[in-house]
Image (cartoon, rainbow, N blue to C red; front, side, top):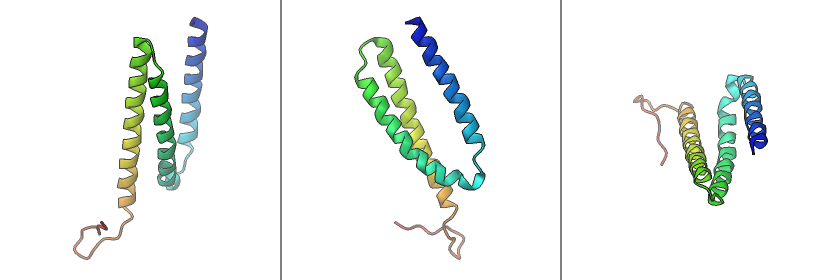
Length: 103
């Protein structure tokens, strides 16, 4: 049990380093398209968190599953909100100064 925990922590730390290096190299102009694409990936992560939480049996695994689902949900919703705000900047302005709304 102890050895597998060390392996999982090692994977997590390595993934954090690799993720930071990859994200820090992205040019600003590509940020909006990549954000939209990553929202789809985060949706898949949310489904995975739900599946893992559904199979939890111990109180610790239930709590960790709940936290995983909660964080994944916040990540997906926040990503779509940020993407919507960024795309709002590209809409044309009306002569009155307000942005055009298409409903």
